[in-house]
Structure formats: C-alpha cells, structure tokens
Length: 291
Image (cartoon, rainbow, N blue to C red):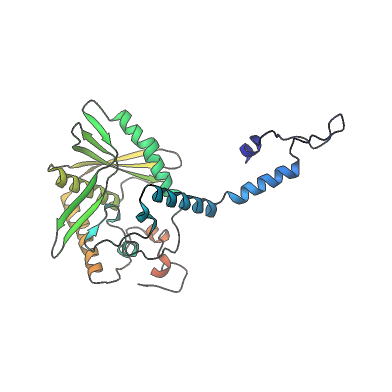
C-alpha cells in the first residue's frame, strides 16, 4: 500500500497545514484522500478478486491459444487409465475428481501457482547450472503412456514428468520430481504416493525408450524458506507390483463396478484438506458416503 501511495503521480505525503504563504497546495493529497485511496486498494486486493482475475486471465489465454477445451470440465478418463500423480491417494477422493464431482472447497490459494513458479524460475535453472555437462542436458518434461498387465485389466498410466536429465540424444538418464511444501522441518522421508509417482515415471520411460531406468530424484522445496531436501529413489519392484499396481487395479475395479470406494487416505491430513470431505462424512455436514 505504501508503494502505491509513493508512486501516485505528482503527489506525496504532506502535513495538511497551510504553507507560509497561507495557500493550500492544490497538487498534493490530503490525509482524507490518502485514506480513501488505501481503503479502495485494500478492498480490491483480496482472495475472491484474485481468483476471478486469474480465472478470467486463464480463460482468455486458452481461447487465444486455441485451447478452448481447457475451459470446460475435464473429460472423464477410461476406467483403466491412471495419472501418476493420483497413485496411492484416497480412492474415494480420486474417483470424485475423475468424475468431475463438484468441489466443496477450492484449493488453497496460490499453492499450484507457487509450485509452478518455483519449478520454472528456480528449480529448472538450478538443474541446468549444477547438473548439466557436455554430455548431459535438462529436459523440461517427458510424456509417458505405458501399459501394465493385471488380471483381468490392462492398466494404462499416462502423464507428464517433471524435469528429466537426458543425454545428447534425448534419452532419459534420471527423472526428477519436484514437490513444493510449507516446511521441511518434519520431512525425514518421502511420501509413499510421491515415490509411487516417480516409480510410474521410471516404469513408463523404461518402456518407452527400451531401457532400464532404476534411479530417480525426489525433491522437496519449502515455499516459505526455499530450503531444499532431496531423496534418491531406487526402483523397487516389490513396491511397484504389490503396492502401486495393486492400488491401480483396485481403483479400476471400483470404477468398473460403479462402486463408491472406501475413504482410505494414506494420512489424516488428506481428509483435512480434501475438497470432498463433507459428502464423505469427515466435515461438519450431517452427510456421509454420498455418491
């Protein structure tokens, strides 16, 4: 607010008394005018206004770039298709999200935007400056579309990776996954669903390029302090088959049979921040298990 006041053209803060000549300066703001300006600024700079502005900006950009389809609801994915970022999360929450159930609350303001800015403005340049060599390069992302055979379904895992270290021919060497978080104070180990996501990238890139990728890097960055903590992830066949693939196969069965999955989050905080917690019975509303 002070910056707004300081840069108001041809005006500055003054004592509202008269000059020695007894004439009031006509080109300066009075205290009441300043208060009116600051009050107007404070009333306009708020969460709802920002969300409306951001939505309108995104809507117009999609139309301008010929991507109008992004302005409507997401298409409902086939029952056998899974996104790496959804693996090992609450079955019910993911089903609600896949089938475009109306959200009861919006995502925490700025979380996704802050994460994308950290990746684009800090993480990518950091990788390029510290990891890239004459023989290695940093690619912004890579697309995966892999199949996993289970009984009775063939599962499809599709998604886009975070930055990947590649060779001069563009072959992947080390996929990375970046997660922004509030604090790293209690981050002693990676979350299971983040490990699952990186495993999906390792599996998908190995299948796509006909090579065996066994190592990935999971990076957490604090949005408040910009501290960084990284974990070396090795592909664990048992974890992949018995935990990740089993989760995906079970989730497909729920959708094929049109069943409402149980609310089984990995952590309690998943319910606390869930956009569907009221209909699930974990909020204050007298409802639960709503399809």
